[in-house]
Amino acid sequence: MVGEELFSANPTALLSSSLGISNNFAIAIIFIITIWSLAWKGFALWKSAMKKNKVWFVILLIVNTIGILEILYIYVFSEMNFNKKYNKIKKK
Image (cartoon, rainbow, N blue to C red; front, side, top):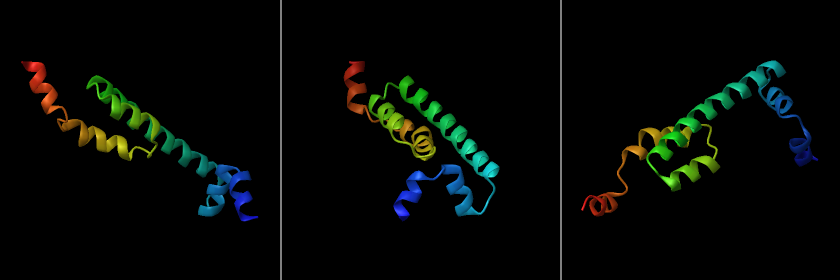
C-alpha cells in the first residue's frame, strides 16, 4: 500500500529517493535544517522568556516551523507592545 511505504520507510531514504540525491547528502540536509531550527528556536525562546511573554514561549516551544515563526517573533512580534494597558497600570 502507498500509505504504508511512507510510515515504514527510512526518512533519509525517502528524502534521497524523492529528490534523487544520495543518502549522505539527505542526512546533511536534515542535519543543517535541524541546527538552523534549533538556533532560531533557542534565541526566540530566550527572548520571549526575557520579555516574560508566557504565551509566546509556549507557542514557540510546541510549534515547529523550521525557524519561520521564531524569526517572525524575534523581528516582528517581540517589538510590538501588547501590554500597553498593563504598562500604564504598572507605572502608576
